[in-house]
Length: 589
Image 1 (cartoon, rainbow, N blue to C red):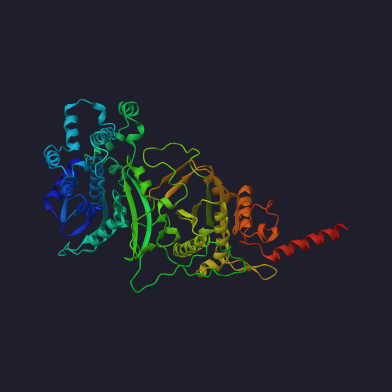
Image 2 (cartoon, one colour):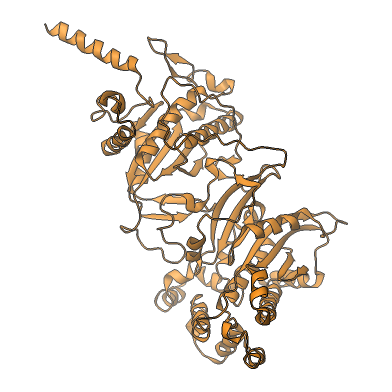
């Protein structure tokens, strides 16, 4: 297998630019290059020379070809998406370790000339030192070399050195035989993704993520010297000497890290003649009453698969972005957060398409190699599990239609609670997992979902038994269509880590409790939660309505009711309770 891989790599170098078939384009750009040239013209050409040499070395190591250059911008093409991502990871690590010219050399011709004549690449210097040393366990520790290179760069660089950051964007496409790369839509898409990134950030679109999501282990071995598959092979050796060496000589966490991929959200491209309408409620608006039927919807058909977010966009008007980082530098992603340099014609698709850092607690949770147990620094979160009761009666076709309607309701209800919610996962049996920062937002979304499910336009199969329409003795609609079982629990998660799709995944007792409430306690149309969660939500709702009476704000004996369906308890329910109490008093007399 290794011989075949080397032959394929030689073919990539011999063929040069691709003429047909799949390919991946990478566009790089120095952040603030125009301002740097205007402010320090003497240093700009030195920075550009170092930048170009680093990118060319990383491109050669990862079997790419240069399509075009324009000033500080490079457009490179790779046959394999894995090679393109490896190029970006290696180049970013080399750029971060590079001792850039100092600002004090801007007006000194002598010092600047000495800099270019005595410039030494720290990567090449370390390779030379490594070949002369007999440090046998350096191969076992993939981070040992990176740490030494980082120390070398930080000690040699001055505090007044230029801060050069390069943004990179990747896009994958297909080249038809006879088609030219100039003006290809994939090249234009890579430029658009690169413009969205910040300096030092690597962004890619959905097709590229689909191609590399199964090789994150190999990409995790990439450092400033390139990809080291020998480290990956050592993980798979299950003999006791290798286990002893990896366990006691090299740190165990350093040899088991994959590249980190984060979902940054799905965005839509608005047309020039299309006006986008915002339908979010006012910040001070109260929650809608049960009698208001403002949830009449049609399926939005969001592009979600039965196991999670689909990686390919539904149309060219959608852009699904992902961020990739090395395990050692994953914490850098918190500095950027969910902020992207979006153009005016790009907007978030819906409330279900938020990025990783829009999830509660993700900025406080560790990323990458620091997988320590959660402590008090992680905030309290409210986990919600919702599933359709008797979902197995649907055929595969009907289940897809019901899933589209379920996700349409979830998106609209998140808008009703002012966007405080994050969709963690969509399971294959019409089950959702969401996370909220406030318990009142979780309960408001759950109650709104029960109302929205009755007003949704369902297929015929979802309106037959056992999902037929039902009304109470007063003629109020109580059931129509699929019925949701919802479980809610609040607590401090033990860990928050990106899953295989880059979405935020929560682990802990609060997650297990919410799942148990849904599976073991709730029935169709019911919401089950702890008493403390219900009381906190009731107090928050009462605070927003100081003029309302306690019964109308808190509902019927909320301190003893642990599960209920209506968003806001109707007056008819209170009247029925009073009539029952009067009948009991008459019978006692």
